[in-house]
Image 1 (cartoon, helix red, strand yellow):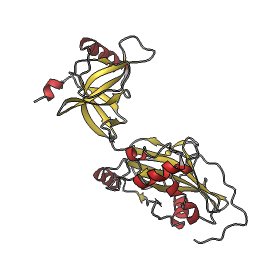
Image 2 (tube, helix red, strand yellow):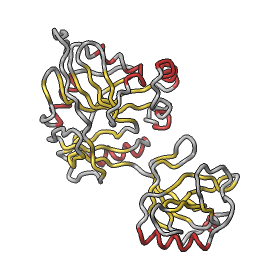
Image 3 (cartoon, helix red, strand yellow):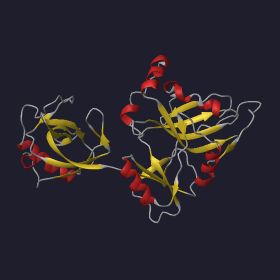
Length: 325
């Protein structure tokens, strides 16, 4: 799809990313496309056809200098005026996106430091949509037409690619995601237009999560609530050296559960931390590590903390004493 550069660079529209709603896989799914959900940072890619490229974060910040290895994409797209939707990721040794590795790159503006980090944590751009191409807006075009236009650009390089989608067969795609340990699936209606800035039901994200039991070793006060009502609990898991801190869990608790939990925590109060390692949380109320809760999380971080933990329920049928040998 070679094209000579225009006499003057293309004038590009400013487009904010379209967002997906969380939910289960659609059934029936014949009218849906399924893409891998990458564990990275959303990025709008803009190039006016002059060989340069601009990367903009979901918050609207210019992050071009943060990822110097992606600038060469401007040369690949020379002659094309384009606005693309993508995810910046850093892959692990198995080829899976690793948000913990990406965090080493995020927010770095110093060119020398960004260049050094690009060697240890090379970024890759997963491109999955095109909203403007060579003077024509594609916002109103259906998903299938936009993907055809994206495919015709043949964006397959050392630091970028346009991964394929699967039409229908959502259950099979989900099974592959679970088997490979990927973050999840994004389902997109084949006929859907691109609606900038909107969280649309035509795009649906389903994340893979792990369920596990954790021990409550402390809690923090909920802001604006009566004294003794927790805003979050400090979770731990049993390790060789004792109870190891695994993170703070504050999402998912109902008002009824908070009230019930407050009563239990008051009875189990203690003056010292039950965790074997250091807990870097302020104003903690420590408790005897007896209560067990069920939580879900997307993964473990490299520092041994739960990522995106969500409370599911208290397990009064299972105390820590039951879990000890």
